[in-house]
Length: 163
Image (tube, rainbow, N blue to C red):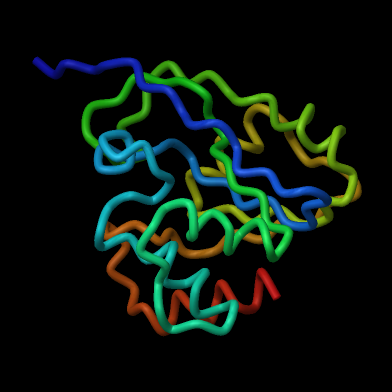
């Protein structure tokens, strides 16, 4: 018998006048323990963001990592606000409840691009919000360590989507 437990997403990282919104699905166990987006040490998210914005050094402090997003007008959030899940895999999600993404988009009309960190975030987004006008969608490879694609391949696909 599996024990599922209710988990909650974090508040969005939201700069003034964001132009890009990156959406994950739901924080994994390591992220929940640290209370940081993409907190697993082998997750490539922060490394990709650092490389895209001209640094091969990943900021050590979480506040500095978020500042890198904010200074580049990038918002960060998860499609889901709550769900039941055993472990960290998106495929184990049960009883999902979405975040108020349309509200954030309505309050931030400068967002013209949504980047989905992996296929599952896109799948849940479409289920709850459908296709929205005035934004472009880009699905990029998940930065999760469960995705074994080489870093360089992930980086290039993220570069094409975000820049």
